[in-house]
Amino acid sequence: VLNMVNVIPAFNLPRLYHRPAAGQDSQTSPAGEMLAATPGLTRVHWDEARRLAPLPIPLPQEYPQGALGLFRGQTVDFILAYTCVTAARQPLTHYVLLTTEALRQAAGRVRALLPLAQVDAPPDPAEKTLAPQRFAINTPPTEDEQAGDLLALTLAVRDNFEAIEGMLAALVQGIPLGIVQGPRDLDTQLAFLQGLLALLPVPARFGVTFATFVRRPEATPVQIAFLANDAPPEGRLIYDWQTSRLIGQPPEDPYSRFIVSQLRLDATVAVQQM
Image (cartoon, rainbow, N blue to C red; front, side):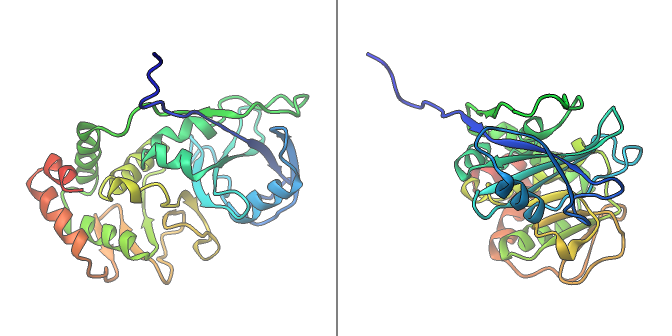
C-alpha cells in the first residue's frame, strides 16, 4: 500500500531575466529588454515584475552578493527579485514568480529563497527559454532551527530586546520597518530577516515582504527595507544597525511584548509559545 501521508509538493516556478537599459536600473527606468523567460511568460508578466518589484542594481564593490527582494504581485501572488552585476559586467535582474503555497512551505526561511533567484553565471545570450526553478522544502522549521534564528537575531541587535519588541510590533501592526547603516552582506541581511520572521507564528511568516537594497523607500512597497540612504524616511519605524537602537516610537502590541518576554528567558521557550 502506498503511503501518501506527508507528501511535500514541489513547485516549478516560472522566471525571467531582465536587462535594464544602459546607465539605468529597473527602478528609475522601465526600459530595457527581457533576455529570456520560462515558456508561458509574456511581456505582461515582464511589465508587472518591473513595475511591482522595483529592486535597483547595487554596485558590486559595495554589495558583492547583489540584492534580494520579495514583493506582492498583481496577476501572480508574489515576485522574488534578485539584482546584480554579472561577471561579464552586465547589470541583470532575475524575477521568479512565487505562489502563496510555495511561500507557505518556506515558512519564513528567507535564506532558502536565495538559491531560487541568485545568478552565479551570466545567462547565455543565445538561450531565450528558461527552465522553471524547482522549489521544495521537505520539512517544516524545527524548534532548534527557529531557536537558532532567534539567538542570531539577539546577537545581531546586541541583546537590545526593546528594539526587537519594537520591530516585531511594527510587523504585527503593519507599520513599515527601515534599517539604516545596515550590513551590505546578503547572508547577514537574510539571517536578520529570518530571525525577525521567526518571532511571528508560522502561518503569519509567509507574506512579509522585504528588500535588501532600497534607494527610494517611498516607491518600494515592502514591509522591511534595508535603506541605502541613512536619512530616515517618513512613515517608517527605523532601526539603526550601528547603534542597535530604534528611531521613532514603535506601536504598543501585546503579542510582541509577550513573545519578547519569553525570548528574554530562553529562545526555545519563545518558539514553544508561538
